[in-house]
Amino acid sequence: MKKYDVIIAGAGPAGLVTALHLLQLRPQLSGCVAAIERARHPRPKVCAGGLIPRVITTLRALGVSVQVPAVRVFAGSAVTEVGGINLEPSSDPLCTIIRRDEFDAMLLEHAQAAGLEIIDNTRVLAVRADKYKVGVETTQGSFESRVLVGADGSGSRVRTSVFGQGKHNLGRALIVELPVPDRQAEGFKDGYRFNFNCVAAGVRGYCWSFPCLISGEPHLNLGIYDQSPGGARAVMMSELLRQLHVAFPELNSSRVHGVRLRIKSFPIRWYDPSDRYTHGRVILAGDAAGVDPLMGEGISYALEHGRLAGAAIARYLDGDHTALDAYGLKLHQGMIGRKLKRLAFAARRFYGPHHRFYFRLARSSSRLQRIAVDWYNGARGLDEMSITRAALRFLLHGSL
Ligand SMILES: Cc1cc2nc3c(=O)[nH]c(=O)nc-3n(C[C@H](O)[C@H](O)[C@H](O)COP(=O)(O)OP(=O)(O)OC[C@H]3O[C@@H](n4cnc5c(N)ncnc54)[C@H](O)[C@@H]3O)c2cc1C
Image (cartoon, rainbow, N blue to C red; front, side, top):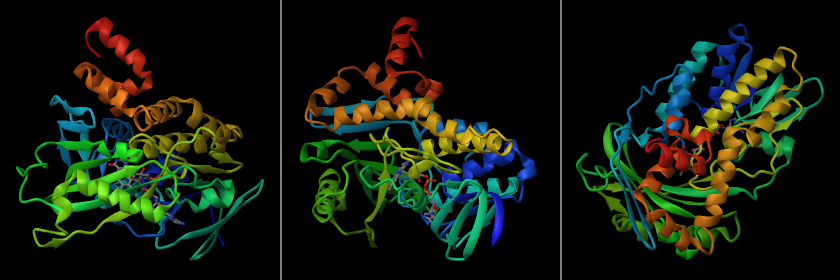
């Protein structure tokens, strides 16, 4: 049995940033922190790859710059039942769109340089935790650690093994990648596009179109997010597909530019204020814990959870036995928890029975739209305050 101080299940953004930050804080732990990953990087990940500005700020604080091919988006639009919304082009990117295989492999490089050991092509099967240690059963044998981080995504094995928390807060998203002739093609040059018309059909979510580069070639990734939990899944999937085709009629040909289109689907776990994130020596981070219910954005939360987890584990290993419990509380009561609660509130409004009223409100003022988008994006740290305070500050001072 191999022993480590810290084992991280899953080497996605949440797990890798936990390792990176912990090893930055405690370089002497080099070689004593391992990530167990079921795949091998660079591995594909079903994701649209949109990084909001908050992600870039968090990475910068960790000494990481995004050095992978990316499309920077400066403009956006949304279709709603009550009319369209056009965001005025901004001077700073609204979003940076990367490919997750490249982005996650870049994060792994940083974490390995800091001293992370990666155990890949290995799946976590079960976890046994007691007062003194955590045992991790995998497809490559048994491991033991003082602390275990469950960063193994929305279907987290650590979560089900240790926390026994269910599937009630699993949404899902479908995605398809469409080649376009060049960067001036319609859709690609228009920035990101959202379409909320599917809310009228009972979908608690939206369709999106993001410009992206796949092997250097311009593409659009088109998808639909639905926050709704399970239910009659087959029926729901076909309805989601139908709504995606209605929003983007260009999908109606199954082959575009000679390429056969493939629809991929993956769950997204969203934040539930009643979830627990700490159980003794085991903590959860990223999708395993729960992310944005409104838009399904999860990379910024994966990184913030990772940063907090890294700091909490450092304190715990120093002898502060309250540090892991404090991490769990912070996820609910700190900045991230407050932001996620506000997004859950917005999801209930925009995807609820009175959604037309809220979309009308959103259309009523371009200033309001800019404040809301900047707050959502965490531009200039705005998400550290409530959106009402951000709006008041804008009204009082004339700028943010
Ligand atoms: C279609 C779609 C589009 C999305 N678009 C965006 C977007 O544009 N922007 C955004 O911010 N978010 C987006 N998200 C959400 C985003 O992908 C996640 O929130 C993010 O990946 C969470 O990071 P993570 O590290 O917590 O989990 P993951 O990225 O899922 O990483 C978990 C890792 O654990 C590994 N793993 C899983 N099970 C095991 C096991 N048993 N043993 C060992 N390893 C295991 C996996 O291989 C993976 O490498 C999208 C999601 C979907 C489904």
